[in-house]
Length: 192
Image 1 (cartoon, helix red, strand yellow):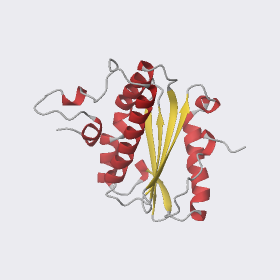
Image 2 (cartoon, one colour):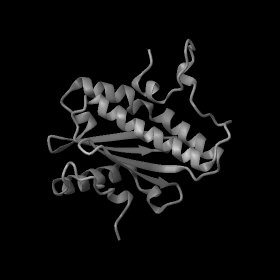
Image 3 (cartoon, helix red, strand yellow):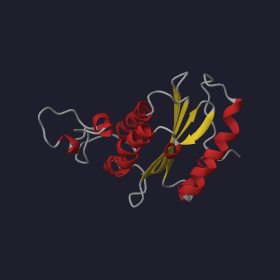
Image 4 (cartoon, one colour):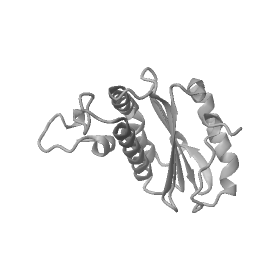
């Protein structure tokens, strides 16, 4: 049986027992840099779908950080629910936590390897981090990529992620749920 992640990201194959290993693009595909970036955008959108589905559409907003470090690839998620920010692993519903852990968080190495391979194949600077925001009411979503050659690529992920969480916590009350407005990216995109 395919996980939610495999259903979202895997290439559709019929009767192929290796369905989990088949992707729409591979490192041997001849893509343009724009196509590689567009493919990452589609994968980011699918991460949002997976996150929203994993909590049965009960989140008001979703915030995702992907670390593209192949030695420590991670997907970190927090949600706004009933006006409060909650880390995915602090949710009350154990079923939601299990789905997130098994279908999204555990898939970080596969996602990172795939995106890094795509970017390498078209000679684009790899991503260090990517942040995704989604607002359920307006269906607006925002993507912020941090390439390996940016100053923010050298941030220590855990403290930076927690700072982003705190920064979002301090701003969500001033932004309406249907505001179609980006919320802070925290230390990953400092405002000068």
